[in-house]
Amino acid sequence: MESLDKARMCARLADDKKAENIVVLELKEISALADYFIICSAASDRQVQAIAHHIEKSLKADEGIQALGTEGLRESTWVLLDFDDVIIHIFQDSVRAFYDLENLWTECPRIPFQESVAG
Image (cartoon, rainbow, N blue to C red; front, top):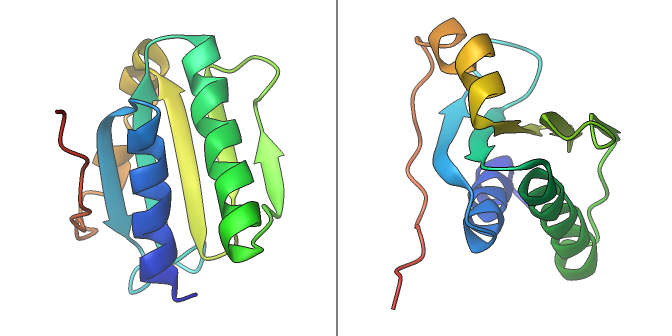
């Protein structure tokens, strides 16, 4: 699976669990950390966990892709999922505002993903 497709899939999976303010940043021309960062917010520790588990389980079941590492699940204020070329940051709102990753990576292009439509 191409890294852009994986990033968009992760963003859509986060959206499935009602993640808010989802941003996909393209880093591949700027940093060797990853090709893409996904940054999103959740209202509670349970929602942070639900988003993280949904992304992990879906990528493994649908694509056979496992996370190389997961950080922060115990506290669930900021969970990082490392899928090598795609890194996902799931924040509680206040923690996201404090660290403000989008401002650290302002030079990165934002990549659209198809959000689900409420029905």
